[in-house]
Structures are given as structure tokens and as C-alpha cells.
Length: 100
Image (cartoon, rainbow, N blue to C red):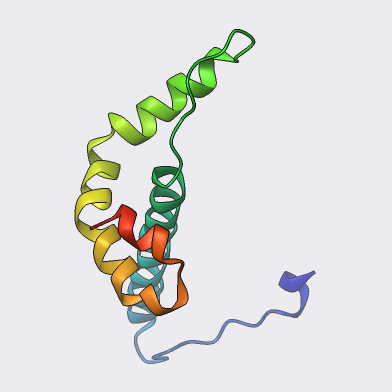
């Protein structure tokens, strides 16, 4: 429905490539921000001890994404603490303490 009423608005009509580059950079920034938020959310929960009726792939997925991913490891150790400390007045103190 949005596409019916949407009209493209150029940032710099003289050079349409500028609009594409700025849009791409904003999209990249939004994707990195989303990945950072997912890292913070998944990193704030500890997996419970295994139990008998557990679905095995969930623990494997959590270990693969949180513990073994180098990209998310870099986000968790570098970008997440900065992001959380900037937003610390708006977040619970327990969450901020998880990322020193």
C-alpha cells in the first residue's frame, strides 16, 4: 500500500548517484545497528543447563551465533559497550553491567 502513494524524492536532483550512495550508506548503517541490537539481546541471556527434552539445534545455534562468530564477537567486545554506555540513562543497569 505504501508503494502506491510513494514518490521518490531526490536529495540532490542534479546527480542521482549521490542519492543512491547516501541511501546505501544509510541502509548499511541501519543493518549494522540492527546486528548490534541483536548481539546485545542474544548476549544478555545465558543458556540454561541442558535438560532431557531440549531441542538440540537451539543450543547449537546459540553457541554458533554468540560464542563462535568473529563478527558478533567484535561487536560484543567493541561496539556494544560504547552503544550501551551512550544509552545507559535509558537502559536497566543490569544490562549495562553485562558489557563493561
